[in-house]
Image 1: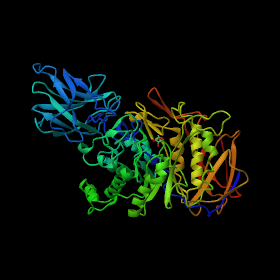
Image 2: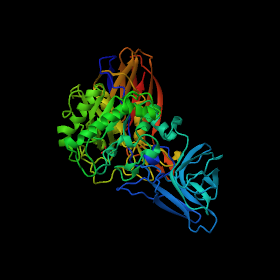
Image 3: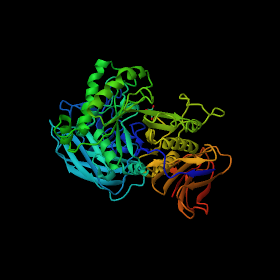
Image 4: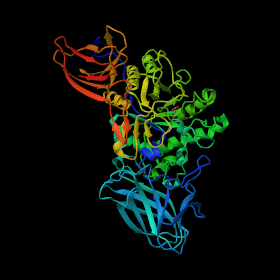
Length: 627
Ligand code: AHR
């Protein structure tokens, strides 16, 4: 393949070209990136998922029960756990233990904890991190009880193990002496050090994995998870802010109760920590589970509520909601340039109402007050949205289909702006049906496969070629807790054990492409068409070229001969190539050990006497050449 790359004349590229999509699915938030170690810390429940004692266990002869005490901890957290001795006459140690989110990683580092208690107990509480399998205790601390019979009292502590536990089969326990009546506990919390020490923050190693992707935006808080499974259970911003005692939680759309500890401000802190642009999704008036769509009149208060949310984020402290934010410790307004109205409103019977009034009600209200915000519709439909707006296009598909759609954006009017807010290869190709789509009644891939990662890279290269139209792209879902998940494949899989984090084959391809950014594309002339090689090139400054390519379904190695305008013989280039043993290879977890099949090769190149770079790539390679 002979290519000549011009030094200018292409399109200016969106600075957000690669980013993240996040929603609480697969325990990616609670039990995932949100660093809270205690599972079911505040017995939150709803009609969808009533409060439960799971996974708490009794210590000694204690009896555990859920109670709605006459004095609740808060109106948001009315249910607590009562720990009572089976017999008040028998003295002994009783208490409760929690196994974490399928394990607790114990390291020699401070664990910051707290719980609220109610009762007449005047002795000590002993708090431990210990093995669930042996009698080994890694950290133990006794603190005096300050409980009162008619008032919830917070107890705070720091546990600091001296050594690491050999595995994550550990528990967190609170013990006390029986004989002075029962004690109620609520909001029992334990945090390891978080990423950058952010309060109520995120797991460091998962944040580091995200950082490796060089993401420019975070689309949150859904996905389906903003929409609500049934009436009243939309994601409500004002119930996710402030002290944890004022967050009731809600039934998420993925079968489990969300604590909302990871709330609106935490999402913005996450953006600050990873230097990402927030892309905020707001509820658009349809409940996903029941398919209830609000009428225009019923929707009006929710449009107003969205304006309140935006004032909370963007208003100065003289505004009512800006002052609420300031009172929570954030005097400076956040920045927000992108708001998406709903999620996939082209599906589930909501398209008609979305096109006729739901989108425009939100658009008009937000645009009038915040004309600089780009408002994104969720339908992926380039014609159904008004002037000055953009749309979010999702695609879950087969490798062949991604490759066939490489040029999807080449000829759309340049006024259209498109977010590729969710994409992933989710099933194998179907023999002799190159344009087949997903069969949603059949199983999806358990892990991303390498041919899928290559096809996604070709889709991404197609998006890069249209960086004036494409705002950005984000693989979805981003995370899966291997112990409890609803959706595979996922970009990053994890357990409680940081050593078991699997960065998928797709992760490595995105990492390569996203870390090689440029400001504008440049035209390429070629002596051959696309396939089996697909490519894009860009420049950041004169002479600093970035060339990207991916190879799909080649029958032999693919030779490249690339001349970059203005580069002379002897110019230097660096070629980074990712390959895997074959297209069906996956990065996985086998018997608790991470298997990583992706191979990376970096080669220093020199331009030939004719001033061009020559190299060969194997089938199923993704490569970046920088000069
Ligand atoms: O990423 C999983 C789900 O796929 C999202 O919640 C939804 O937007 C899409 O249908």
